[in-house]
Image 1 (cartoon, rainbow, N blue to C red):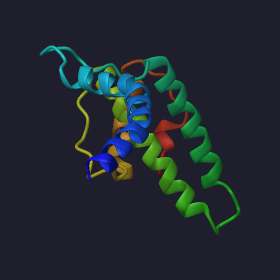
Image 2: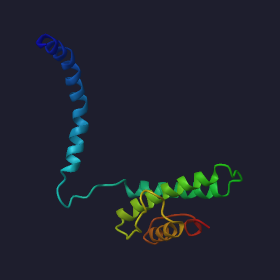
Image 3: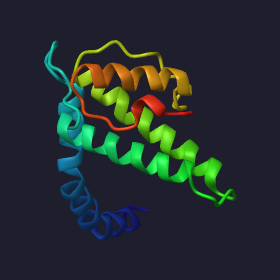
Image 4: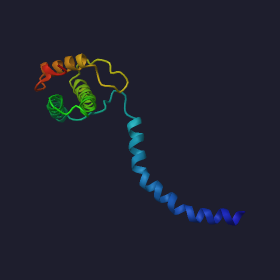
Length: 135
């Protein structure tokens, strides 16, 4: 019994050491994220990138909405509205604007998303076609 355990330990030790070395940076980053100083804010994506994503998604939403192909249009619109919700909420957090509560990883209702896009636009984010969103 003792010999088998020693042989297994000899065979598994290199794999365990290599796994620990490869996983250590990821584990360390996860621990540092959990042990932040109080009051330290988690940084999101830069506001310029979020605004560019919002503009791109609004243009794509408009293009899909006008598309004559009905087969995948509703699913594509739902996916775009989910992505628009994510970007709009990120931008609202970055600008410290009040944002509506999001229902469990679902897109915001179109009226709420239209209002949020309007608030973002009034606060200085350049958004084309936001006033026609969902119509």
